[in-house]
Length: 335
Ligand SMILES: NC(=O)c1ccc[n+]([C@@H]2O[C@H](COP(=O)([O-])OP(=O)(O)OC[C@H]3O[C@@H](n4cnc5c(N)ncnc54)[C@H](O)[C@@H]3O)[C@@H](O)[C@H]2O)c1
Image (cartoon, rainbow, N blue to C red; front, side, top):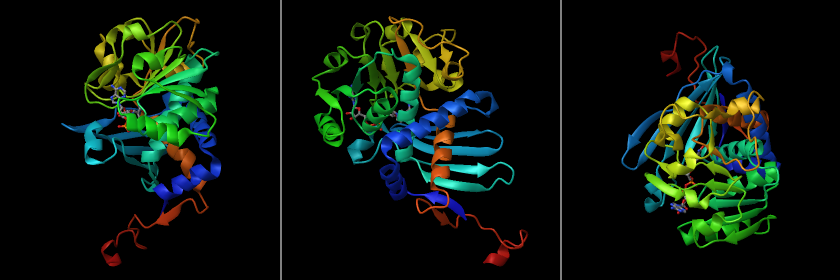
């Protein structure tokens, strides 16, 4: 038997604990795991590309527990009435090799991406940050907003999406939850007065969602939508005048905004900031960028949080996924 958390149960868990509290738990777990970065087996995720998107496997282990996520990224899926991102994840015992936890990860990916974004911003954004611009109000957006409220106290949002229906949806989902939301007519308007800019768009191309003339001194950019080869959101000149922070460079060079730069361009691995080796923001005027692509350890941390919270209660169920005969040599005898 393995412990299984379905979509229904993760939704129940979110209602039970509260979304901000759950995001905070996941952010704390990610920070703890990133601080022990060197204990993990790491590799860039393994992609299978098609014209319409990518399917990825994201494995890691701390040599005690192994974890992986299956996730897709298909920006054109909305044309078919389908999601851009879906996924599920597994934890397994390294000693026996037996998987012991299986979990939906479409919602959990949104929670962990938001937790990571806000955790990084806590280290990099100015302390007096109060306004966040959100460019792209699709599936990840509400989760991002809640995470920035939970970890940084950001309640003032300026939003823009090319699809007015996506902004309608965002405003409806977020009304009466303590946010001030200003709907903007374009990205230029949305980023005005913003201390933090989150870009969360989906397009399989080198987009210029933000251009250099939009970026004022002291801004923190949380760039999450550029996360695959040939799929970026920022004009190159913004990267050239900013300090760039990444998860796992070997993966970010392939998938992140920095695929636009020469390989010797300076950047900082964010785990070094979390563990205090390196300073994050060093001045008020500095422009910081989190070039987020999503790394396997974030999924590992999120899976472990959900596994612990749903163990021995009705937020998980046991499923009979592994064929385990009484006599380990008599598999045929089970039939
Ligand atoms: N870095 C990470 O860890 C991570 C995790 C999850 C998703 N992502 C990425 O984040 C992006 C958003 O994911 P999602 O699930 O919210 O996708 P989604 O398709 O639900 O939403 C994307 C939104 O962007 C809008 N958009 C597209 N082009 C735009 C433009 N030029 N200006 C303003 N808005 C624009 C679309 O109308 C849509 O509403 C995707 O690219 C996805 O791959 C990254």
